[in-house]
Structures are given as structure tokens and as C-alpha cells.
Image 1 (spheres, rainbow, N blue to C red):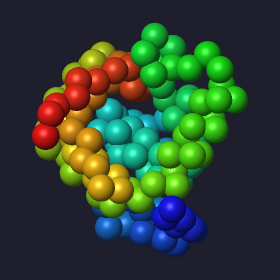
Image 2: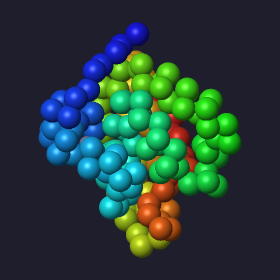
Image 3: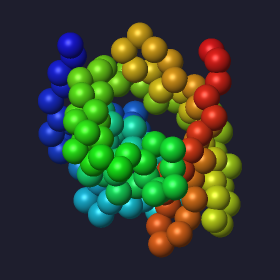
Length: 135
Ligand SMILES: [Zn+2]
């Protein structure tokens, strides 16, 4: 098991090269990000840090990943944060007014998760679903 301790002065898990306090922390504080790309990156950071509140509040209610059992959802996010979130690679960002797509590769433990995520904007941006690629 890989346990990483984060502080506000740690490098941000999203790979921006900035300190966490100057990066995803800004969005984690307000449970919202100004665009889908920043939402994607800050959700990766939130998973790495076990910030379940951020994941839950930025997942659309219509998402197949939206769990009705919040307690179990929180547990699974905290559990997932024991993984080693090595790197996030953004492949493409397709922005729009109400819908946006981010294709990425997330390097977690020995896995590479290659997905094109879809985000929708209502009062703010939300993750809704994604298409996974075989690597
Ligand atoms: Zn960040």
C-alpha cells in the first residue's frame, strides 16, 4: 500500500508543477472549477488525496458513477486514495459552452486508465460519464 501525505506546500498531484495551495486547492475549497479541464485535473488530485466531498459534489446526479449510498461512495474514494497516483497526462481538451470533453491517461499503481470524459455545465461544471479505451 502506498500512502502519501499531502500538505498545502506539496506539489499538486495533478502534475502542474505548482504547489497544491496554488493549484487544485483553489477549486477544492469551493467544490467547483472554472472549466472542464481544471475540473478533470482537480478531480484527479481529489482522488489522489481522498477528498470524497469534491468528487461527490462535482459528479452529476445523472452520472452512472453517482452512488446513492454516499457512505459507501466515500469509503470507496478513501480506499482508492491508497493507490499511487503517479501521473495525469492530458491528451485532448474539447471545450464547449454546455458540454466539454477531456481525453486523458491516468497512471495509477501499475495501471493506465485511458478515458475520454464528458462534462456538462449547469450551475457549474460536472463530470457525467466517459468512454474508456483499451490500451
Ligand atoms: Zn493541481
